[in-house]
Amino acid sequence: MVDKLREPRVHRIISELLSGAIEPGATPPSEDDQLYVQDLGLIRTRPQVEIANPIYREIIPRTLTWITQTRIPQETAWYVGRDGCLDFPKLLDAFQHFFRENGEIWIERFDYKEAGPQLLMQAFLQRIVNSGGRIDREYGLGKRRTDLLVQWPLDEAQGFHGPVQRAVIELKILNKSLEATIKEGLAQTADYMDRVSTEEGYLIVFDRTPEMPWEEKVLVRQERHGKYRIGVWGM
Image 1 (spheres, helix red, strand yellow):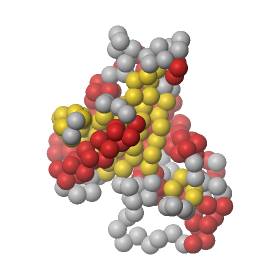
Image 2 (tube, rainbow, N blue to C red):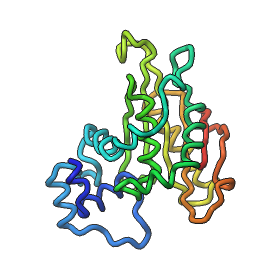
Image 3 (cartoon, rainbow, N blue to C red):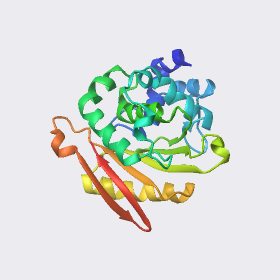
Image 4 (cartoon, rainbow, N blue to C red):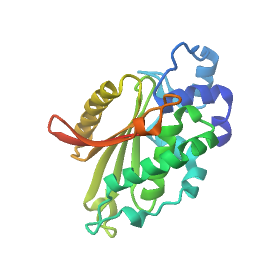
């Protein structure tokens, strides 16, 4: 699969799906390219263009970030509380710091730089949850977001047959004003929280504006959308 993902005609289509965005003014992929990727079994085109199945939604990002995962200097134990839960605010604070210091360097190493921030966040999370948790992913063409559901068993002996912490992390690229992007992201995060039945949710907004000072990108705050309280991190 790695070799196929590196082919230009595959790269173009999969990168759009991973980032969730179509670049303004970009020429659409050719019919031949899309049919080729479909024939490989990587995508389906009905009812919309998307990764073919849940297994590939999991495998493709993990394949693209595996080397990165193994080299991120993070340990699961740093983020597990006495109650056995993952401390997501602490984890996201750490990622924000990591992204500020290392983000551009790591993203340049990816074959899929267009989806670099989303892939780096997933690699960081995967490094933490690999010891027993699971990440479910939803993304697709035109969504302008990546929905992650992190599931973390609270009883090691029972695993997923026992109590499980479930947290939504929504990854979003700034595409409007900051406040408009956050407003849209909060509604999307709350909707996903509703669908997966959890009250723990976080929204991450990546500002890719060239030359923008870090101090103007960074933020951490709590917002409310309907019945949910949602943590917001900007970077």
